[in-house]
Image (cartoon, rainbow, N blue to C red; front, side, top):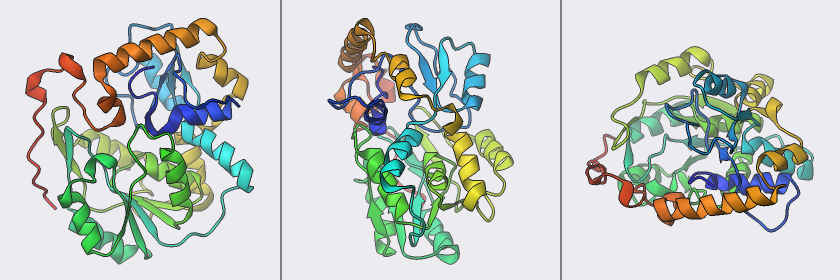
Length: 318
């Protein structure tokens, strides 16, 4: 219904979990699209408060309530539902895997990440097991300064599709299972997905920065909070039962709902809510455009100020 509701295949996963056929459909709810340490200012503040705002874990729920967000529910991250679907089909995630999968902090069309990529490569190769694979976000694939350092180092480069690709998380799930270790230069969804699937995980390498119309530099306080909350993750890393337990908490596995309750909360059991969701989705697409939903553009229609359109300098620090 809102622009990010269909990112990373979340609605498709939830629909499959609910046993619904016919593919993706608008949901009469706002679905949190990625892991965050804290809810962003204004997140969940919306005019249509009759539509539920769905967050992943109990910390997010408490933060939303303290911020005065109405009609908010913790339901678990869509990845936990994907695992429930796929793990049941393969009798649990297989052990093993080889090498290291790296998730650099990614950018977007108007938010360019500045990284010491050569430093990241050196640090990973000194400490982690080969072979090495790097996940490059779709909006960074056409940037030679992002991709070339990894190619020249002989790393395998993968991408899981645009953010509106309904198979995005299915591909990510399969890729994680082929690796023993998952690493990132900032705490993010990929780290918790890896830990939830039983992989060793670690945060390391040169700290990334971000610059663009929305962010300038890096939120230093967020980095410090992440280090305070997960010190082991930033040192030798986490593995085994400990990693999976922390990931389960961050992904809200204990907040997962039965299929019937989830289907009702998403508005898929109500004729008027299904119709309202479709109307709002159409209006949002007219306002923001399909490219915004797809992640190929962050200029949502004529409402965006022109001064925000120009991207920053493309020159990399890496």
